[in-house]
Image (cartoon, rainbow, N blue to C red; front, side, top):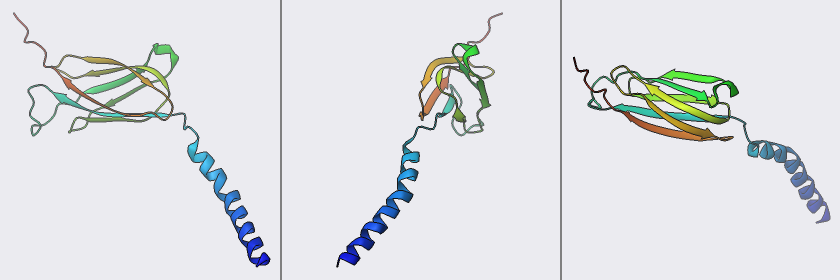
Length: 126
């Protein structure tokens, strides 16, 4: 009986020694952030071919870190899979539409979704 308990304790200790460091590492913060989203366009039906938009994520102030840039896909989706942390200015532009801008704060392990509808530019008057 005592021999069986000693084996059980030894096995439990071994498992704790193996699993505890892995569990601790999984709880640690990654030091990165992630942002994804969708851009819709005023007066453009979802079934129509979507315009492409340029999406820029710029540190605020700009000299405090790198800028990230991407373009929406045919469904209006964009993604920044791994960015640094901090304050950013999110800017979205597309030809024929008013630009969009927002302030974003991304802490460690932030994973966010952003949805925007760009408004059509007013027709130019002669």
